[in-house]
Amino acid sequence: MEKEKNRKYGTKMTPCGVKKFLASLLKREAKEVPAVFLWGPPGIGKSSIVKQVAEEKGIEIIDVRLSLLDAIDLRGIPATEGKNCFWTRPPFIPEKGNGILFLDELNTASPSVQNSALQLVLDRRVGEHKLGDGWYIISAGNRLEDSSLVFQLADPLISRFIHIEVEINIDEWIAWAMKNEINERIIGFLKFRPDLLSRINENRNSINFPCPRTWAFASTLMGSGIDPVEAVESSVGTGVSAEFSGWLKVYDKLPDVEEILDGKKELKLSEYELSVLCALGPILVLRANTPQRLENLLKILTNIERKWGVYFSTLLFAKFEKEKIVRCKNWKRFYTQYSDILFEEV
Image 1 (cartoon, rainbow, N blue to C red):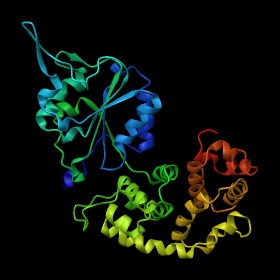
Image 2: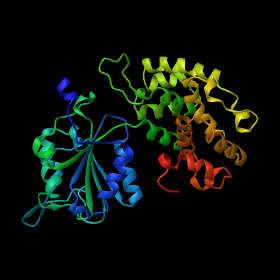
Image 3: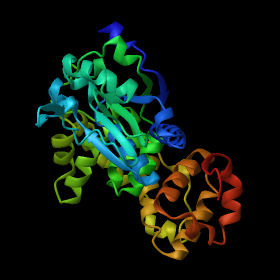
Image 4: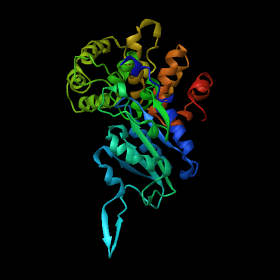
């Protein structure tokens, strides 16, 4: 197992890095682009990345689970016409159009099916059926050490891909979480304990485990009125729920956010411990729900320690459109302080 943990799965990229990489590849003609394999633990969004890239490019995506097929299925169904026999084209090997042929969870397919995929991945054809020139091939799968039911890819198939290992980045996830209305208590908790965003431990005392997918489940349950600790325990795991239960006590120590945003009270970070500041960020941004409060929040961010200003600002730009923030009177001073690390362009 130790040897497997040290295994390399290609260059490492965060989800945003993978999206940029794929977007660059998709600017080239599909038939010129080698197949791509995305590796990573379960629940971190590999499939979602591919679907987002297809949507942003405005092309179709065909999701094929080879684990559901037999080796012969790739050739199609045999049929006859007069005295001739031929193989009907499978619907998942399109001849026309443009899009991504997504071989998700490829390494859960049996070795015999993987062998049948060799020709498809390299030669862009299976038997007499040629994949259309407008179709890119992307695959994804879990690593051998992820406690997943996977088969090791044979070297001939491995050599037919370029390989990328998707790694979690807490700041990227927090920005995504703000846009997708993940519960503020979960965002604050994972800023405080980023190591619990994704963790697979074979010796864990709970069948479930933390990953972006299960944290999203917990947020949905909390939004449905389920007790927060029960929501985390049923979605993420028992051990994590115990820590989350302790975390909730932090909210008793929060300052009066309403008074701060209304300009009636100054925010002095030195008065609060780390956990309180992690929890404070999402609440400040989510409650900056009027033009004046947004103005006041920008002013606050230009007068606090830069480390926390970056954290709060990341949340701010995940929640609000840039155009809305740019219209604020305090925009220029704010931009001067944070433009170097927050924004590529405005």
